[in-house]
Image (cartoon, rainbow, N blue to C red; front, side, top):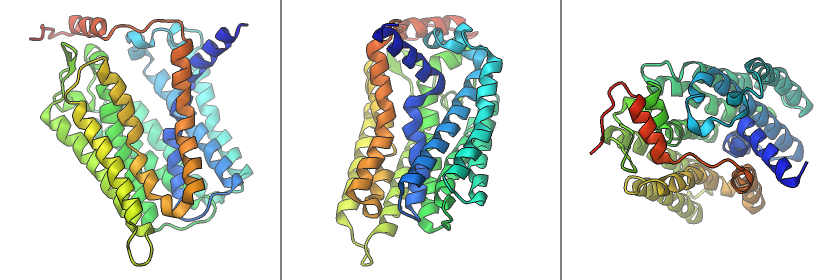
Length: 356
């Protein structure tokens, strides 16, 4: 097999397992652990492996539960599951195997038995979200299950080696929940809103009055702007609260506070820009904004983990995302133009009408 063929196969594997998003998952148990204890090679490896199991379980169950919807999405037409290259039963089996595998990983890492409850709570929250996210009449209620899963990951990291809950842990767990509420509503659902409308789904943006893409512009209602603004602001505020908890005894750490505020301002500024630009630039800025969202909470831990710890955290966070870059360079299939997708979505809507 040629190098290009190998690269294409790895890209398809990433599309199945979402390896590129592992950094967005792994930072939460790592931050939870950093809130109560220092990282060791063994604890770091154990938390990363558990994050991989959780991420694999979540993505596979999501894909197989929403297979009928994905088959109507032009952007997902070439995925293995959609094409039938892998059967739904095989996907369920692989997802189910993550449940005993994560227990084996947990024990091999030497983590405390009781902390296993938290990783299984995360599995449960993610499973509930995947099961009900397309059926709940009030979408944020379904998203609350996944937000609880993110908080459980923080608690898992904090208790893995016998640590106890502290105000820093609870603030970080709340930040994990805020991250999920923001990312689900904005980066996931608003990105796919044309397909969701065409398939008669009810997601948070649709529930809040967003009506799709009109002449290249992504419509965001005032309610949607307020909703995502609340979670963006909450995440920055919680990051500042963590920084305050980790600051020296006199309560002053201007460098950390400035870094957190600067990262929050950048992320908030990008959110404003996303209200002004059109596709395809919107998609690129949206991805960049997504990358900035958890940076404030990561920077808040600077005093606790030090420079080397921040480098390691950045590598864990950014490393898997490089798969996206590699995939874009190697995949052979061309992307479906957004204008064509929008036109198709409007044609399939029962209340289709041309936009002005």
